Image 1: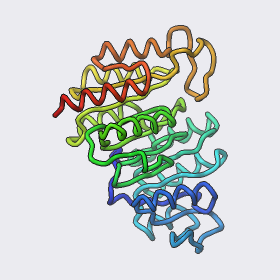
Image 2: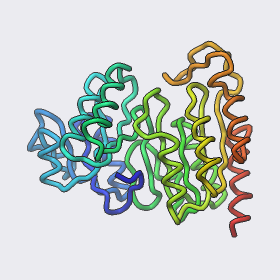
Image 3: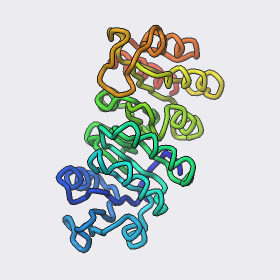
Image 4: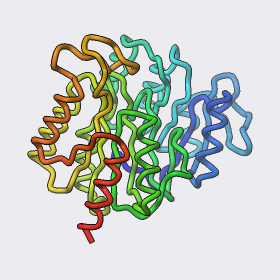
Length: 295
C-alpha cells in the first residue's frame, strides 16, 4: 500500500465511539476525508453523527469499502486492533496510540510483516498523515497545512510536524504530503519508506525531514539519501542539548555514547548532502530558499 492518501481514500475508525475517536473522526470528516465507518465492539448498529458503527473491522470494511483504518484504541488493545485491521484486508493503518507495551509493539510489527505484507502501518504513537486539501487521517490540524506542494514532510516528532507545516504555510509554501512516523523504537513506516515515496512522487520537488535523538534511523536515512535521492532535502534533528545515557521523552530517544546523538545524526545527514538546520525556523528558511531555486 502506498504511503500517500487522497480524496479516494475511505477511512474506518477503530474506537469511533470513544471521546478521542469521535473528536478526531469528526474533525477529519469536516476536513473532507471520507470517514465511512466506525468499529466499537458492543456498539454495532449505532452511529456517530451519521457514521455507522460495526462490531468488527471485517464487517465495517465489507459494508463500507474502507481501505484505510484510523486506530484510536487504548494501549492495552491497540496492537490487537492493528492486527485485526490487517487481517480484514485494510491496506493502510494509522495508529496514534501512545504507550503500547514494547512486547506488544514488536509482536504487532512482526505479525504484519510476516502474515499481512499487503498492509502498511503508520505509527504507533504518531500524529498520522495529511495530504493538504485532500485527506487527513490522524490528529494533525488541517488549518496549518497548505495544499499545492511542492514539499513533502516526514517527521518523528509530533509537535515538530505541526511546526514544520506552520513554518512553510506561513511562507506560502504548500505541501504534497506530511507524514508523522512516530518516535517509538519499532515504527511501522520508516524515514526510508517515506523518502523513497517522495523521491518517486512527481509532485514532490523537495523534502523536509525532522529527526530526533536515539536509534540510528536518521543515519540510515542519510545513507539512502546519498545513494538514491536527487531531490533536495532539508533536515532538523531535535535534542542537541540532551545528556548522553538518559532516556528523553520518546521511547526511542535513548543515547549510548556517541551513538544516537543529535550531533552524529546531523553529521551523517550533512555528509549526504542534506541542508541541516540548527532549529525548526531555520529549517523553514532553508526550504524557502530551495523552493525559490526550484522556480
